[in-house]
Image (cartoon, rainbow, N blue to C red; front, top):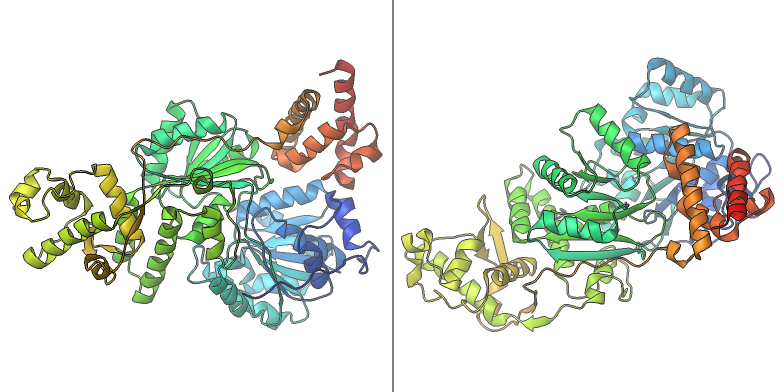
Length: 622
């Protein structure tokens, strides 16, 4: 892995207005100190250096280009693939007094012209553009007419052709260095293996850049993976355990599953909306807007939703179908708990998920190299699902990082029993071999399990499979137990699923098991549905009753302000900032300015009203 550069101080360098990076962090954004590598990144880019930044979602990537932009002459140009994210970030920057705008397809001609005029006149601090628009010569000519402070390439993993979010227009961004060689560039992503990291560096021509690699760990997220049974009912039970007012995202692979799941949740008293590409643009926009502004709303979606959502208080992300890759899973689960509060990544998957994913790879029109990559991605995802060790250790290892068991994932909290499954594996593999070699036949998991359990069905009778030597030798195990064994053997590469109907075949490694040269360890799955567990209590539970009451009053005030301004509540103040106010109970503007998240612009705009809420609470009492 390319190592991070050592931390640096940002006190020495000043912006054109005379303030240091720390001054800007405090006065504009309301934070007292930088976190992790932020200070080193800001200093390096502000001085004109290129950078590649790998930092988890919620780790503060935006500040790594926003502050250097404010320290340099000109306008920072941010390349973002997501229109919704542009809109949200511009709103949030306006709230702290930063002059920001975007250029995208949602604007009228007059709106675009006004943004272009402001840019050329030097009236913008930050300008967001989509990669597709930046590849157009008219946009590049526009940028030539102004002063560019830096280029920030957000979601830089989109440049990877093997990645889960590949965007062809990102490939043209390497030309930025040729056209504007003196303008620093910073590429940022929250999702990159070592291979993707190298690809970002090469494809964006960032060979001379400094590399800053933060830990991918999100300790506030609790990872849970459960066997899929009656998945919609399992989902309802999980969401109810998390709390009725929890905002969350549920991911499914197909539009039909999305629609049915949203309807099922609604019927069980959980406010839910569907989101997928089959809905018209107005409906999708309205759903996204409601999700940002309403509390306790669940969106059931395909992977098209959420990447551009900058909502910090998503309490859970649930998957009811198996993700295609660990990168995709990490990216999607990272949309939970951006505020640092306890959150959950919940996944239910079963044997049919594995068969379906294998079939999708086999039936795709991709070349053999792409199919092999897709299969490798799926194998890694299966390994994460089937591990008997810490989920977090497994996840971080995938991204090239080491860690100790977290004590907060399901396998740490309730370690699964591990049993010697060699005999069961031999029984199953022997059945596959006999069908293939003796009769030239291959079948799916269900039929193989019927043979092993000695279950008479029209198909087993028709094919004479009740005469096989392995008929009934697995009757001591339930159908559910056998399905778990099949799933785990697939994950371990001891079985292969092929073709349209998911028929099972042996692999090269199967022979070692059949000859007794290799033992097979399996996790023992309970026949009962795993107990649904509530996450760790939030930081709110640590407040005294009077502070909790003040916090709730501040939330009500914030909701009213957000409605009046037509912005999400977190744009006014985050929950963390409201907790800080509720704890410190400031009496003056100076005391309020000391609360994390209260910068100069917000102090001027909201300070008097916030202090009034605090004083009113003191007078009335809790």
